[in-house]
Length: 208
Image 1 (spheres, rainbow, N blue to C red):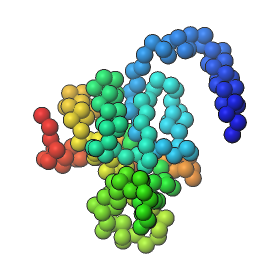
Image 2 (cartoon, one colour; image 1 turned 180 degrees about the vertical axis):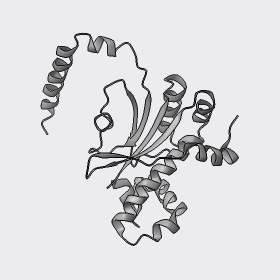
Image 3 (cartoon, rainbow, N blue to C red; image 1 turned 120 degrees about the vertical axis):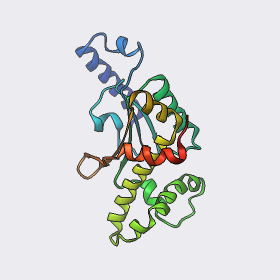
Image 4 (tube, rainbow, N blue to C red; image 1 turned 120 degrees about the horizontal axis):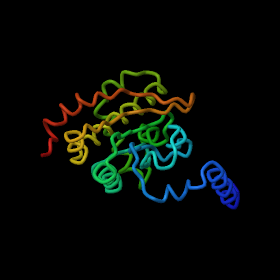
């Protein structure tokens, strides 16, 4: 890739926007009020705004390897706090994708150095759902199912946070679990049962 080409692409993009709306960037600079917090994977093939068909300012985006929401990750926790408390988003989306390299690496018994502590979070998801996953004989199907279960568990981790619990109580914020199918380009709604998760989570993780 020619890095200089990126700046040419940027100039073309700016001109396209200004041709449609001469005040586009002036309005964009006034602030943001996104409806959605999108937590996705850093994979270069998965671009949040493009796959959702939204514009700059519509979604507050956080990305990391395998779309994780560990409670010890200050970056993810700070993003959730800012999006929920200050931007007051109404929806939080955790979006995984099939053929995720992070999930694939977590399924293998390898020492991957600095990645080990991060991948351990995904391996914990496997441990929780070991019975179901071990019953799947086809490796690709098992791989895809772990992607889905990882999204589900990260939704639960999101719901455990005090900010989300308060926003659920005060204004009915919702958490969604999606998977992006790279083969088809389609988004799959895992239909996370938010109310049921809240009911189960509250028994142990309830915060006043």
